[in-house]
Image 1: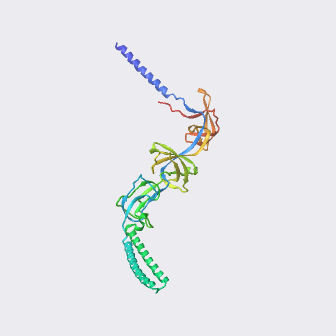
Image 2 (image 1 turned 90 degrees about the horizontal axis):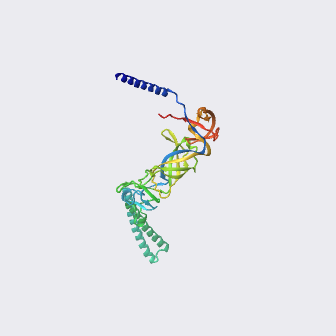
Image 3 (image 1 turned 30 degrees about the horizontal axis):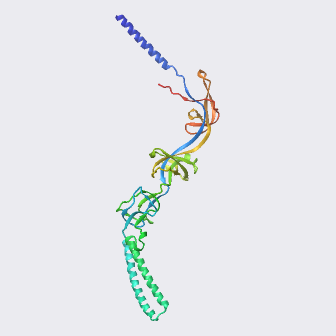
Length: 367
């Protein structure tokens, strides 16, 4: 019995040894090289580029106060629609003490002049009634009285404007009411009730009460690399994609290419702007990130092969044309003239026919 067990174990060991040897031998044998093969196809080639940018309103206006003061009321908030001339906020005037003192002094002086003009008129009228003075002298004195009255009215109006921001004679045009200068959508109201605001003048830009824009007139704004800007012309069509709106796509027309480059992390880039055509029913918000796809060059109905089948050697390009079948298969290196490429397929201008088969990259053997 023990003798038979030894024989069986020896047979098993021998079988394992032989199997291992055969496996290693098969693995060490060189595998035949297999290549992908392609048949040239007639297709369209488009060389495109994708530009990253934002969607913005063409005109964005900052509404500023005409006087300095404190915000007492705000009637609108971001997201509200507003018409030109509609009131957005109200300002309480904090008068300048120097201007206030000057305005009060002007009123007092106007009252003194009016009293004197009234005395002169009364005296002159008595003389004129007795026909002791000429009509011309009487008219001059009456005119001086009218001028004095007008000056007092003007002085009071000026005092009210300095003190209150509005005069009683022109309350409808009050500068304390901050009105929108355009019709559109309010994008931002950066002030709150109680905030101090200043008017725009030579020395400062003034406080922005609200930012208003016409959201019906939008543009795409982005930057393109200097290597591609030379292929752009105004009027070219673009496809805009906004990821935040479930990949909504719509058209745009290129209307501006900056004549000057800007340095963006060491790369020279040029700003572009395109008029956006938004389909009705889609609400676009200012500042959305967007991608613009633009066709830089195109070739229609041309013979193409995958660019991976092309061998580049200096300024020349070659393909390997398949000859024969099965074990007799060979590859003929042939020079071709290429054209436009979209990064996947490339145009073949000469050197190939539709019936040729072209060798591609080597197939990777599966483990």
